[in-house]
Image 1 (cartoon, helix red, strand yellow):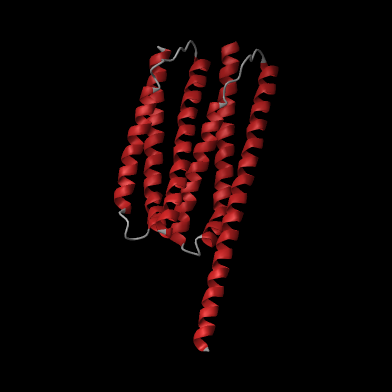
Image 2: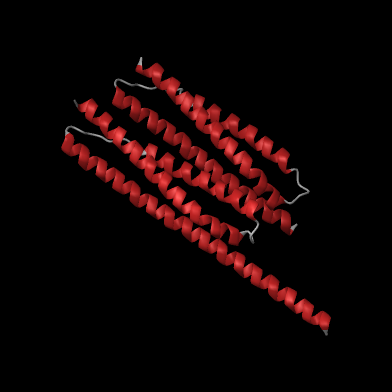
Length: 114
Length: 134
């Protein structure tokens, strides 16, 4: 009973966070790309492809990470397991986000120098 | 009894930690706009976009960390709950403070670099103008 509830809540929370963060990054990321890569680069296409790949990786990972199952006996354990799992997904998102910003920054320096 | 106290501890910890994160992020990036405008030479749209990208990163990092460290073991009575809770919240607040300072340092550094660049450009521009005049 608790396990089913936990799976449902976990999938709902993680997909909501993933989609919301993706939307925000897509919105402000376009401007950032335009600034870094210049007007002649296909910024909108890069942005859309990045969003697509991001959704696939994150929702896929969130679903895949259910493979070992939850072992939940009471409400306190439910709360703790949900928090820890969601927290690790959010940390993963954060690492990907910073890698993304750094990659575009390095890419733009190369682009400008060449 | 034990389960209920643990549950209460989680219900106190989560709003406090998330509220602290949201307050700190709001303060930091409200004041960070000024630095971003300096870094991007007063181009408001790009400065705001980059500001919001960094804000998303800050939220993700700190909310993720707050949720990951929630595990509190051996809560048996109200006294141990208070001790554990205040240790956890205090530790998280110190971590948030360090993150705030780190972000501020990055802003300062970016601003210094941008100003240096601007000064060099000005110097170059001034020199070439001077040569043209002669």
